[in-house]
Image 1: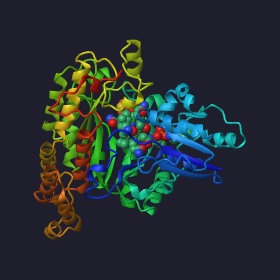
Image 2: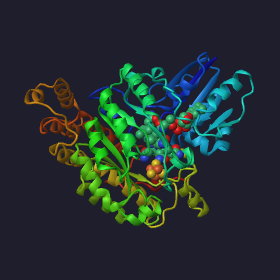
Image 3: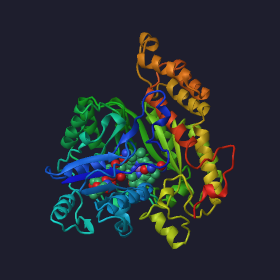
Image 4: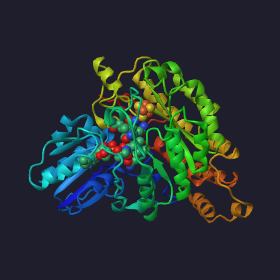
Length: 498
Ligand code: B12
Ligand code: SF4
């Protein structure tokens, strides 16, 4: 039996897109998916399984396959349905899984033969058996949560690993909180589950054996919530030589853990700051985690240990009026957040905010393609939809104008944040730096060229990763399909979808 697992492509340019640094490096995308390698690992050995990531290569609809499994988050759902229908029309059975089909199984089954609701671990074996015996059911849902103590090494070997720059690892599942905009609770349910450290050692060793030495992204929603366990995990990272990794942490992360994270090779942290107004944070049901008065202190401590900050904000809450953009801007520069990301509040199905907006009849769009935090899909309360769209685009674009990006990065680099230790010889005779400089000189975009050259030569030793991430984010905000620019006010049809 032949099984094909597919991850649909992102139709909008986003951070996973690597085209912006293609001219300098290669055509890799940032993140290797982890869900499908897990599903492949759960698949019985006698099944011939392969993975296609549509961000890397096109789906071959003519390939002889018996069963197709497609993973879908909400922004990818429409593309997932297109792929599913194409295979179904060719007589191939299709299973849909992932966060979107799990939250809207009745919608998903309209495009597939079976839907896995929730985690796959406890039901995938049964589904394969049912398929083999011609008794595929419409829905599969486990009555219990996946037991993370079981060792399942994701089949990363099935991915075209050379096509990725960073690799996802998951050490926990779930989150004890329930923020109104977030899908995690709706999907993983109550509680917080931890993978045993011994299992993680096996996973990391597997990746390392496959040649993936660094650039790990720990996808846990709150990597450092349990101080004791995180400290234990970090000592393992040190032994295994894990370097250049990123994790999502919350505002209340213990300073001792931050220090350990830095000692153990953490280069960036993603922090869900969401808003600089406590009132707005409280309205998102995040007040118990995020105390705005501690934001500056935690960012300062993260920086103190040489780690860069990706600061995520969400705008469009009922208490957000136009002044919110100025406040975020002020906060970003006051705290020198290297990589700010401002997202438009999006009522993802199953979330508290979606339920509220549905009750209030405020949802304006059910085209899941627009559910990617760059489009207004609801009627905001304290500013117009047009302004919400326009100013969000504007602020993101302004953050990533080369001069502004350089301003923030250079302030951090000067303080020893996101830099590597290097001697004077290394400063002049670094092969990669020389190569990048030559390539930068050839770029048609002179502003980009100047940003790269300034970063490489005016600064002692910035981590290339920080330059690449900046370039990628620049590209994401300047080349999004929306087409709005800070100088041109978008047409009505561009900002809100019906
Ligand atoms: C890593 C990550 C990313 C990476 C993705 C990299 C990659 N190549 O996969 C990056 C940074 C690119 C990213 C981008 C975005 N992300 Co994101 N991301 C995550 C994160 C943190 C982890 C996802 C993950 O890998 N989890 C681990 C795996 C094991 O879990 P899983 O995917 O759910 O898989 C399990 C089941 O779902 C199921 N399953 C999954 N697929 C399939 C397929 C089949 C056939 C079957 C049977 C089962 C099955 O089995 C698996 C094992 O049990 C989640 C949060 C979270 N906790 O999940 C958010 C999350 C998925 N992201 C989210 C969002 C909103 C975005 C963005 C829109 C953010 C933005 N502001 O732009 C973009 C969208 C980009 C795009 N166009 O898709 C939301 C999605 C909400 C929704 N309803 O879809 C989440 C849930 C975050 C949240 N707090 O709400 N993201
Ligand atoms: S936003 Fe973060 S803290 Fe809030 S529920 Fe989601 S994962 Fe948990």
